[in-house]
Length: 208
Image (tube, rainbow, N blue to C red; front, side, top):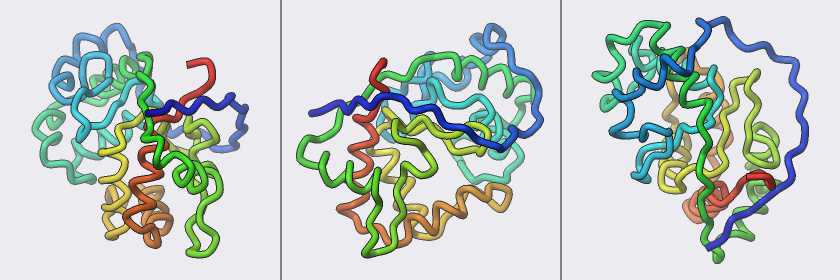
């Protein structure tokens, strides 16, 4: 098993984050107890089917949670948990999880080279773009553009999401980035999905 460390590169974006309530991480810590069963109190889910959300961009977490609450994104397991949360509750919980540190994962050494090639260079022959172009060389994402952090994410979860995108599933009409992902994933084959998902799990910034 392998962890892949890459020195962080500063990325500049001209996108502005969407307006939202300011989150209070201290208030969010107690409110996050409703999320802990699946995601853990520190956001490092112990179950590979549920995503790690520690260190994820605050705005991304808040927007996705609001979409589930407002039934714009279909996550049946999550809706009953968030249906009664206020915008302030969501902002506070998102601030708490964003303030946590994602625990590095490990990649399958047998898949690293294929995963690295796909992540950083895509597959020109099949028209698959690189993951790096939106999520950055270290998988840190671009907060202002709404591109989430990926590094350290469970390979099982990432692979499931990529297969869903490949099948044409989006996060709803109000999430244009997920529509972009449908186009990104449509030409991925299963072996590529497994390889890049494993690589992402082992990816982390050099200082992590």
